[in-house]
Image 1 (cartoon, protein in one colour):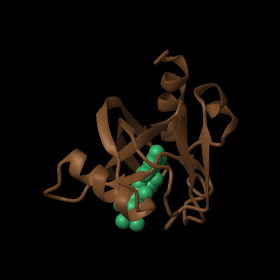
Image 2 (cartoon, helix red, strand yellow):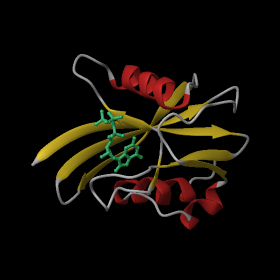
Image 3 (cartoon, protein in one colour):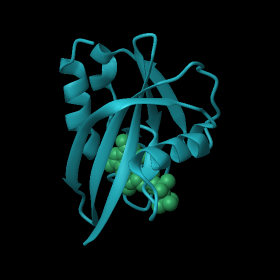
Image 4 (tube, helix red, strand yellow):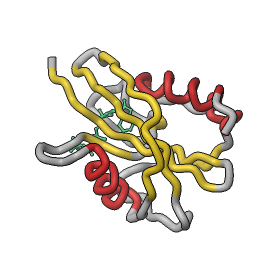
Length: 132
Ligand SMILES: Nc1nc2c([nH]c(=O)n2[C@H]2C[C@H](O)[C@@H](COP(=O)(O)OP(=O)(O)OP(=O)(O)O)O2)c(=O)[nH]1
């Protein structure tokens, strides 16, 4: 089975976190799910480089990476991912959605309302349990 290393940015601003909705996908279990912005790491890139690049591509937004959060291994029916999540901040909430169909800024208590990609659920649960 294919195995991908994926980075995801948990972008916080004024106590809210940016949640993005994917659009159509050939795999139904990924289509229309909420996720954190990011993507697959390309060969030769560090995790941090991949994260900065993906956020610029997807949102045209410059972020500051604060610290690693959770690493999740998840097996989808057709591929597996290792999802490296990072806590990040941003100075501006001006961004452009280039790939996603919707976004929401939610506080931690509200995160469980969304229909998350399965691999993100441990990250969402951990975020809801953290106090800072
Ligand atoms: N970016 C991101 N991807 C996630 C999350 N959770 C999750 O299961 N995924 C999955 C969805 C995708 O199958 C994979 C990431 O690939 P992608 O399609 O977003 O990455 P990419 O931009 O490099 O895509 P591509 O070159 O294959 O088109 O990881 C998440 O929180 N963020």
